[in-house]
Image 1: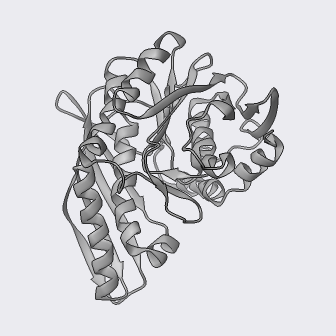
Image 2: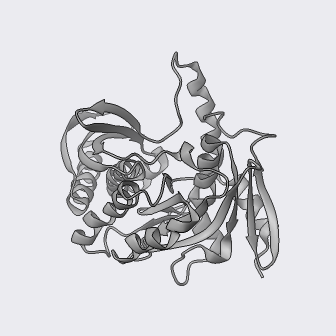
Image 3: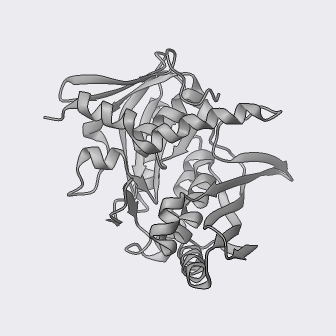
Length: 311
């Protein structure tokens, strides 16, 4: 039986989640941020999606190729989480030497080719401590906003289970090597489909805090709570539940859907050989809870302790 109290404690203590608390510093900006990982800008008949990611220095030092690939995959995920289609990406790279820079740029080019997004420019500086950021733009007609989740919605978890654990800490599950590039480029269209057909109305990509931590960020923006049924979460064979809930996958999303749309929403992912399943429900408690085996455990009470104060 899963020790839910231990699992809840591990989620609370995860470095990827604790790091999100520093987003409170953004209060110093002279304008309000809505908390989504991407911004929307009106453009023509739709909207542009703008986003950026700074790659963790530890990953950049330990595995420059993976860091370059992550700079692409994280930006693509942020655009897709909004129900959008990525257009192009630019990067800014500082490397201590030429060899390091070559590995990072090779990773960028490789992931961009696998995911079908162009790297159209950027900046490179050699001879200084390593740092990597990348920025992506995309288009969207029917945005998915994290803040749109409501009590009574069904929580969906969508993942690509084809892939492998890359052995990093925090854990990373990548599908970029194992999955056919044609499928990788089509996977994100599932998010566009559920948005444009009105099957889902809120989403967030699963990132460094893992599934539970990313769900907590969505809850803070939406002003509601949720129970996550850990037994129903799609999970690769052979991966322990605790590790999976703390994993940063190359394709993973939490979504909110009205009960009558759950089957059709899951089918949009299943047609693309992706796993999607109802794994909980949203409520008005502002508390994230885990459930399984007839037991439950509280992870975080946002009313008592905000995470980032976003939303």
